[in-house]
Image 1 (cartoon, rainbow, N blue to C red):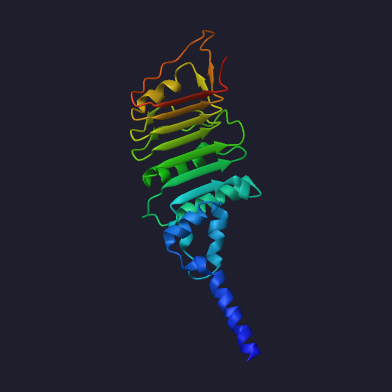
Image 2 (cartoon, rainbow, N blue to C red):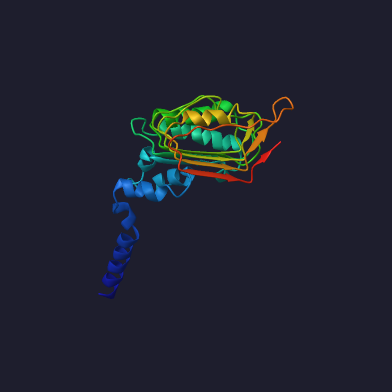
Length: 224
């Protein structure tokens, strides 16, 4: 009898420990949004219930910090994108990387996000990227954009954008910053540690015309 009771406790404990598996997919997706995609993919080994959960994740958090080398990270990203359910939209994409990545690599992630109606996008470089910029920004669905240590895009077409955060970005004259005015529905703008350099030795200023802007934050900026 004692043995049977012991077995019952084990079974009951196992059921209680695996309560998370009984949750609907959208709640599991939300839980996995707080971890990197490497760990999210590894959950496929838990059981048949978890085998394909990662293929339907709407929150994509790519981080090179989860990998020992940059090539391993870029290879993982390539296989993740090719293995994800291509019919499902993406709510948010975060890309964080350390070291020199190619323009093509960044472009591939952005193109995937844009073609899957992403609403929130964050691209963060942990190193200075003098030769890397986010080019030809065109997305009808994007509402929130954050860029860290990257050159601003030469052309922006973001009609739905309401929140923009730029950190450690250098503008040359008004060439880059002037394009912010094309985001007609922008309501929240933060420029943190951004720099405006002189053009051919001439000090220049800049104008931003945003009729819907309600919050503007300028922090630790400087003029060269």
